[in-house]
Length: 287
Image (cartoon, rainbow, N blue to C red; front, top):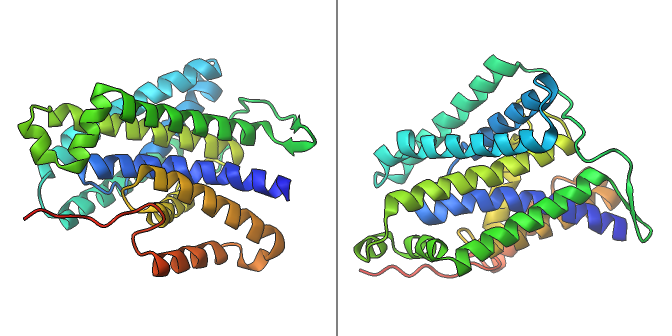
């Protein structure tokens, strides 16, 4: 049971990391970014190329890929999102779906459709943690996810810029009247979201595989996690991710044929009981 719980926490941390990237841009800019997964996929393939083809040391390759993801996030916000900001949600949604297809096509053109083995970064020998055997990839997946979440929450709560981001998320018009630079907030938000996505992409590729479909299933579950935790709630994304991961892993062990069904049934039941999600609250609109 402990082994199963550890595996569930590992998967749940991954879902939470992806969901946090989604919620970050949604809260601050009001954009539900359907291209989040494919943006991360491009940066993950860049990491693969740096390590396997150019023989760049893994730590340096990861840093370069994260910097690359920041550039991509900023450019996407500046070129594609900012011009349509303030327009109807369906219009913006169509833009992000188009970006999703564009980034996927870019990966296909440059790297092809073959499934690749991501370079071993953390070693292959399992770790023995007091009788609990866990692969190094899964262990570091949990560590990277937890550290990333902690840094994000500390930044949001204890820094001046984090306070500005929370103010924009609450009421962007009021925040602008108070002198907050919305352009800078949006730029940093998309950059941070891109970093979270890239970290998740590299972790997924190291545990499973790397190809065109690497992020599809995880992104779908990240959306489900966001709904479960309370859409727009960052702590809810973490709680929802862990819950989904644990339920999914336990179901896979005891009810193999229903592994992909039971977790989503749990989400449906929770949302029927509490439509706003576990940590979601009622939205109050001033008129």
